[in-house]
Image 1 (cartoon, rainbow, N blue to C red):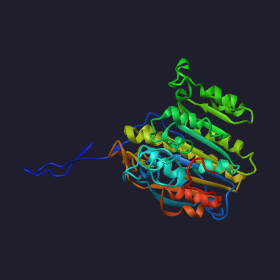
Image 2 (cartoon, helix red, strand yellow):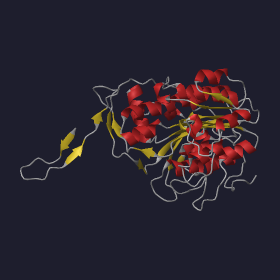
Image 3 (cartoon, one colour):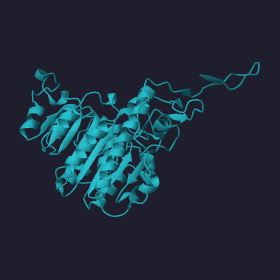
Image 4 (cartoon, rainbow, N blue to C red):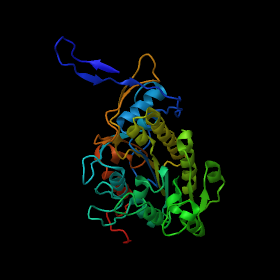
Length: 388
C-alpha cells in the first residue's frame, strides 16, 4: 500500500509506505484480563523472597501494542501493561547505540555495559558474575527457561562467560556446570558429540554428564510435570505451536523452585518477538508477546499464593521498528508498519509488580535492573567471575 504525497503535474512524487492491515493465519489466544486496581493494592516496597525476570526478546513498545490490538481490540490491554509500576529502559551497548542480545543480556544479567557479541565479560573480556550466579551462591535456587536455543545470547548471559556469542560449545559446557536447578530451552546439539547428531568437536556428551550430576532430562510439559523433584534440564521443540506452553512450563518451574525456603531467581525468555521483527512477520510479532503475556499471568497467579514475589517484565531491545494503529473496520486486524528488519535503539518498556517494584519506575538504563535486584537481596554485583 502506497501513498502519493504530491500529485501536481510536474511535481516530484513522494511515495511513502502506509501501514498494512495485518493478515494473520491464526487468531492467537490471550490471557484473561486482570484488574489493574486490584494489582495496584499490592505493596511496592519491601524485600522479595523470589524474583521472576521475564524477557521478551525484541519486544518493544510497538510489538506490545500490536499484540494488545490483536487480542483485545485496544491498546494498553495486555496483562503486563496492567502491572502497577512501569518505566522505560535505555538499551545502548558499550560499542553501539544499537545493542545486540549478547550485550543487552549481559547488561540485564550483570549490571555493566559490554560490546555487542560479548557474553558475561567486560569490553576488556574480563568475566564478571551475574545476578543468577550471585543468587545461587547465596543459597537460592536458580532457573533459566527460554524458547530459544539454551546456548542463545540471552540465556547464556545468565549462565556463561565467553568473548563471542557464537561459542555455543563453550557456553553449553559452562551451563552444564552452573548447578542451576532448572535449565530448559531448545537446541541439544551443542551438548552432544557428533556421534549423537550433535556439534561438539571434543566428543563430550554433556547430556550424559548432566544426568550423572543428578539432573533429569525432559522433553515436554508432561515429562516436566511427572519428573522427580530434582534438578531438571531439557530441550523442547517448536514452542510457537502453543501460545500457552511457555507459561505452563514456567508455572511448573515456579512451583518447583518455591520449595527452597531461601527463595529463587527465575529468568524466562520468549524470543519470538525478535523473530517477528527481523522477519517483518506479524505472526511472530503477535504470538510472541502473547506468549510472554500468558507467562506474566502465570507469574501473577504464583504471586497471589506467594506475595513475597517480585515480577519484572522487560525486553533486551526493540526489533523491527514496529508502528501500528487500530483498524476501526476490524479491531483484530490492526494496521502495522515495519520500518527495519534489524534492532533499533528505541527504549523498551519495563513492568513490575510486588515487593521492591517501586525501584523500576521512570527512565532506567538496562544496567539498573540487575543492580536493583542485587541491592534488594543485598548481594554483591560487578565481581570478577571465580570470586565468591
